[in-house]
Length: 121
Image 1 (cartoon, rainbow, N blue to C red):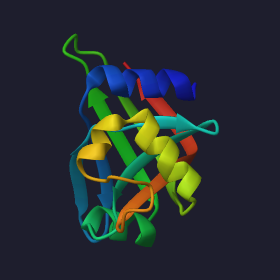
Image 2: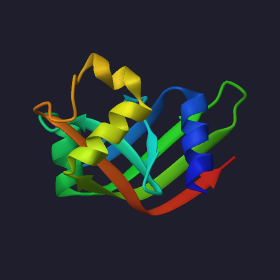
Image 3: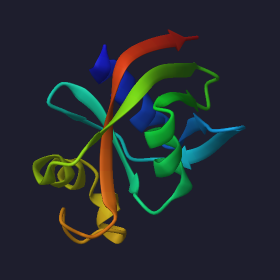
Image 4: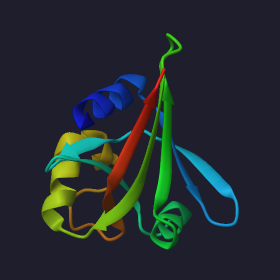
């Protein structure tokens, strides 16, 4: 299942990562990886998206392909502080090297989803 989700998100190119505090927030993301059998994403720990997912880890991801096919993924975000996970994310998504030069770069945060549910059309 996770590989199918990852593949769909990669094929869509841009997907929307949604969090909530007092109001919903939706942002375009483009980097996703499967690491240790989990879906991983990244952001900077200085961004509001990071603060929101730490305060309320329930997230939703939505993507649509030009064909009209879409996917909605719900889950719970878990921050992973291991350098090995940050390295794996950089290896899987080289575009992130435009923002982070190494897994130990200050501010580089990765997280994965648990309790994943999917709706596809």
